[in-house]
Amino acid sequence: MKKLLLLPLVFTCLFVYAQENQNHTSSKPIKKELFSLKQLDVLSNNSFGIDKATWVKFYNKTNVLLEKVDEESFLNYVVLKADGNFNDIACFLNYYGVDLTKDMQTLVYKVGKDEINSSTVSAYFTSLQPHWSNLFSEFQKNREQLLDEYKSLRGAVGGNLPKPLGCGSACTNPGFESGTSFWDYWSGDACTSANPCNQVAGFNTVQHELANAGAFDAVIGSALPVVPPGGGNNAMMLGDGPITGAYASRASISFDVSAANTSFTYKYAVVLEDPVSGHSDPERPYFRVKIRDASGNVVPCGDYEVIAKPPIANFISVGNNIYYRPWTTVSVPLTSYIGQCITIEFTSSDCSQGAYYGYAYIDADCNPLELHSSTGSCINAGTTDTLIAPPGAASYAWTNISAGGTTGIVGSDTSQTLAVNQSGTYQVIMTSVTGPTCITTLSIIHVMNQVAKPIADFEVTPTPLLGYNPVGNFINKSSTDVVYWHWEFGDGTSHPNTVTPSPSHLYPKAFDATYLATLIVKNTRGCVDTSTRVVLVGSEFSFFIPNAFTPNHDGMNDYFFGEGVGILNYNLSVFDRWGNKIFVGNDITSKWDGRVFNNSDIAQVDVYVWKVVFNDIYGEEHNYMGTVTLVR
Figure (cartoon, rainbow, N blue to C red):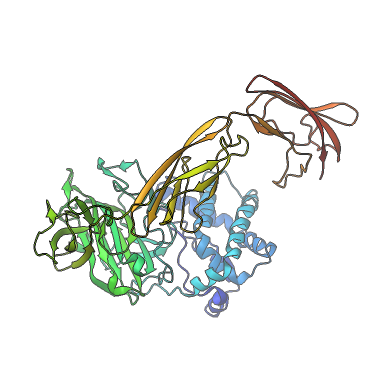
């Protein structure tokens, strides 16, 4: 089943109520309509696996129940409590409608299952208010930005979509490595027009799914990983997979083109089910890519479409009228659009009659459109070096235009990479996957001569690091020609820096651990050297305990406890001023919450005596006593 999101609101946040009330003569408050089941589009789908007919019955039953409940008042209370503006509600719903829709879907489900009735429905809305308050607080933090973005939306007329909000920013998160942010999303119905019908703006957890590396497509299996091989950790599944129902999905990314992102490289994989007969071409499942300029015009060579109608070029049949295209890379040159806003739009669709499916996976990257060398100019002439062109072309044709023909070229001159053994000006002509007339020409002046390589060197102090506070000071001792330092600390973290070559790093607490740290340096010619060192976290014990705490459940300093490393057989005892033992902890993780042997009440404000006994990792026993002040 599909879950639709909040319907796009076509009025600005500041004036929504005034405009709406001009068009309604009913005395019913317009805010009620903004928060209705219909406005949140709860009927169109559910996430509980309930069949459509039963879901409609649940929905109607809930509507009858809500006739006696002013659910809007529960949201109004959240706004009032936060000193908010009622005129912000429409904008708030536009950005957090997914969360509110889920809450209302849960209400419909529980009403349908008789878990909520007229006597308990108000309690359900009351239970939601802390969650709504958190959402509204987040909204208020970004209120001005969200209002500006909301005002920029234009109504969906004639298939047009709200104006993309991404422009004004550099290319950000093209490969979904930071989740789903920066992209714009829509879901709607498959139809025969140029765009999906009844489009709803917003991320839809059914029609848009963040795919993680290591998994495979449910239909194709291991032949189709859901993230492109050699790519990152994530990709986006566009569509609801092998589920029929005449649905369509769209995702787009918009950014300002600069010298840093003159090449947009996208990767896609598609699964289509062929209806065989009884369908016109516009009715069949399809996958479409369109690249638009700031005016919404499709740029040259920026249009790709495939429909489920064999023979389908470059697709593989797996039987049962199912075809798939393995991961395919396409590089789009954007040099002509530097300083302009570009939008790349991906759409997948089922067949419009509802019985056949289509879906896709997408991934992307932004890079400069240029050739580069695997080693720069750090090797001798006569030694083979590798030149690398941007990925994603259907074909490559290399020449040495300074010496003529294939002089200096070793091996194939028709691959993305080119082996060369002498200096020269090398040129590549790349033909796009989108068609033979889409050609990009790049060149590079490549000089091969011996250049003094940098020397990477460093030391780490202290040695070993302290087990309880293992901060390492990384002292750079590399050669003076180095202009870039990249640190890999060996614990999964790194630190690239061109300003501070000698960083400090905090490792996890431990009483005996070893890490392998690596420094990679570059000089002004791009030549690289690497150095590694073993970092030891020393075998030792250490122990710390505070002298006051505040068990008032505010999330800060609520517990009294000791901590350290290299500690065994730990026992903590707490006594009141009359010598009565009121707490015992038999593990280093034991924490006193201020209560007397877990009674319901917190002990009185006072000074208490504590005693700690433990053995260290060398078997030596330690006894400590002190006082702690309980403060409220």
